[in-house]
Length: 453
Image (tube, rainbow, N blue to C red; front, side):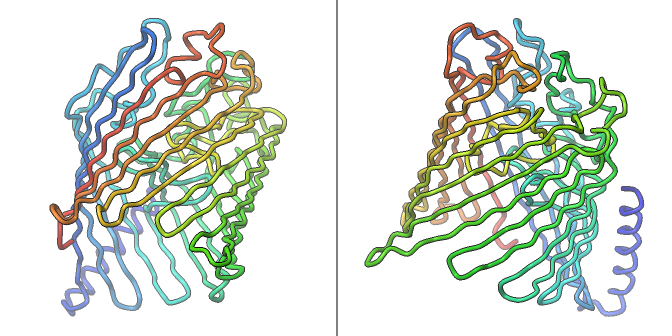
């Protein structure tokens, strides 16, 4: 990471000196934004309820440079305005809160104020080719910005994208460092694994891979085909050095309905993941992943959409040997059945069914949406198939997005109400409930971008 950062500082110095020779070349665009986030979790029974209100301020600039170059830089500051004591364990479960801590630095919950560099990269931009070197956001199936909180996940490395023709594009990410969501620093890849709850090893003991995992790089290859105006195919290979190799193929197609404003939508996704190397450490007690793990995942979607509405139903089937693992610090699940605020990582088998409905009211700048899903998981007592002791559950999300652009330009509001319940309420242990099921979770998010930026 230090080599890339040193190179970037040198490039910025060169650019500033070069630009002084012709001030018309240095034309920065400034962008200032705020995000205020309130979150609360409560339980049906007498577990520890928590709340938190966090604030983020972001300042970023972009400047075009000569010879098709561009520079982008960003700094983010964070403030804990108000929260319950997130460092206190639940009285029955020796675990910290899982949701509200994500608004702050999970490695330093005592910090009220902190900040970090987000984007800091040099770009080369041509019509059919783009490349970026430095620290940047990412959106790939297994390594991505994730689903909210005060800032996304950032990665450090090299990214390039080649558009071969209007129908085919090819991209590569070579990643050597990362700043996960809900952290205030940058880390080596292996160092970042284990900052979120680590669950259990295959013997049912607390996992001990945090701080003991070695992985030097991630290589991501993406090939995208636009088959025609209504269908696309994505092929992805993600190689996490010494941890796993994953292959994903996803086909999506819209189908016109005769004499109708509606379209059918369909999707099919297949994933294969297997362990490689030593899983992060030669010592079995310290490794992150069993190198013999092997999984296949099939996910499908069918639905209908119009100009204002969207509805689809989704199914995912996971089977294999061992446990499907992908660091939660790095991204959310890519499967069609994913619903924000929960994942199906850490499991040996899954049968999941979900549905989504969305309707927009353009004249009111309002959008309503909902998710519902049922997830059938292995026995939470079986650590060989269920890393986090998660019981089978049902989840429902209700969301609202509102953009009062007629009153306040640059402001938007997002409300998320989420509930989860165990499908089998018999013999639930406290460790299977806290942070997991039989709860109600509220998110209220205000985003504001200063006009003219």
